[in-house]
Image 1 (cartoon, rainbow over the protein chains, first blue to last red):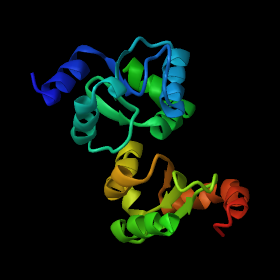
Image 2: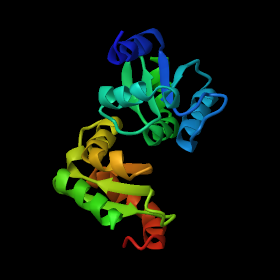
Image 3: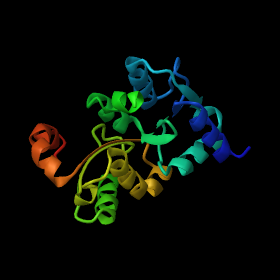
Image 4: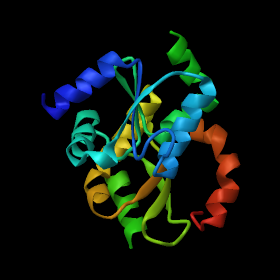
Length: 101
Length: 94
């Protein structure tokens, strides 16, 4: 399975999927930690992958999303954004609306 | 200076935009930007951010470690800019 297929599979099988540095229990970057924190605050379950453990995936997800940084959040197969976008959507209540749809 | 380069790239890419770029830790690695652009009108937040991030993609590969971004349409900025006056002054952006 190519990395692109792997990503497609991840985002199809997980309603909420986070590509991050580190793991939800041990985030390796402040931006990743913040997104995990928000997802836990809204109380949603989510899948995650640690791109630090997979250099090929790290490059593939950037190409797949056309977005140069990590973390990257997908909800229902749609790219939502990185830390800043997720934070702003959370603050405006939009994130919970997207999840509830 | 990389702050100026980032500013030039964004404003070159997004027609009619204004970019305020700061390097608050003065480390040449962590950047913050506020981008106001008429091209954002009618775009979702992620599309607005994507437009800026894509413009900066080359730069990211090499030397930008962290980049914090806020985007506004000119109309929205009209409303919000008073809230950022202190920040902009503190970082000598205005």
